[in-house]
Image 1 (cartoon, rainbow, N blue to C red):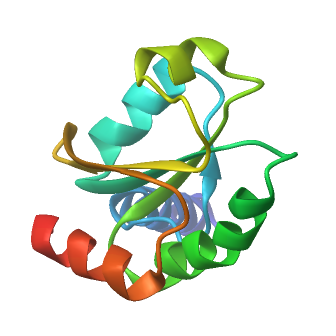
Image 2: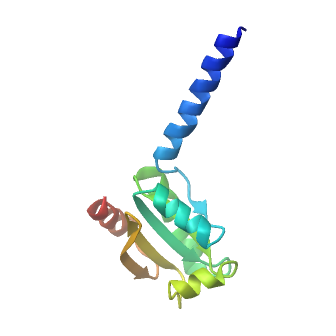
Length: 129
């Protein structure tokens, strides 16, 4: 391969990387901390944030729905483990899990506590989108 071919290949890879960042992820993203949440909210126009815990039965029931939302809608699905991110849970006043927040353009549009059905979540996401 020539240098020109290498450069074209690198450009194509970078273009693909940048394009993929503009699309919402097809799988839920585990949020690491407040800075990571802020970054993800700024990168995604619509985001469904699932505050959950590993020991929570209803959270486990909701998990497949959140995965489907990530794969089938334009919203990014973000998951926050309340045990690992107690500061975030306190900041968003999470007193019971699961608690879902729907963000549009970085602003809270809706807060839901408890298991929600997929149709309701999709309807709310489409209203924000």
